[in-house]
Image 1: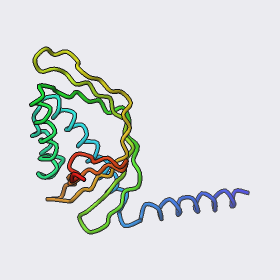
Image 2: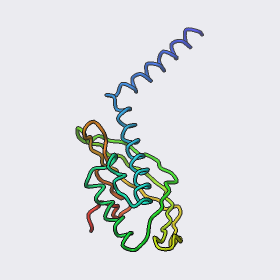
Image 3: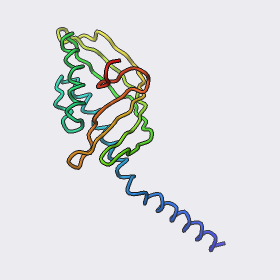
Image 4: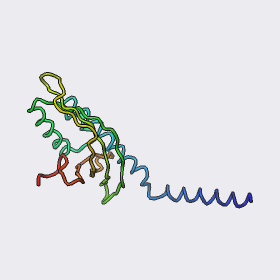
Amino acid sequence: MRLVSTLIAVALLLGGLAGCGSGGAAPEVSAVQSTVGAYNEALIRAFETMDMNELNATATEDQALAEYYLMAALGEGRVRMLATLVSIEFGDVVFPAEEQASVTTTEVWDYAHESLDTSETVRAEQGVVYHLRYDLVLQDGRWLVDRVTSLDGEPAVGDPAP
């Protein structure tokens, strides 16, 4: 009986090691997911402060510029967006080419749009669900969000207009 327990333990250990040895993908998957999380945190701060420089550490220049246009449009309307990421669930992380990654997410966000003139909330939305795909690139040894695409049939920021 003790031999059977030992064999089962060894089999489980070897199975676990085999899963860990899949080309070092697990640390890369974690790095991609962490980058998406950091990007969302930076995005929240950027819209709150109306300073897209927050995105420099987590997004490519093109993606940060796409977000800047949205922030500028809000600013022209004299509104600031305050966002809260309620939850995020990660789907599969894939690596379609060297130094490229893609991950899908299901995200729930709450928003308040605040007047820059009166600080009053002029619009609020809760429980907004997005299904997104983040495309990332590896630059100078770090992952950066290069594009965010809505999988719901509506353009996400940075998507070309239909």
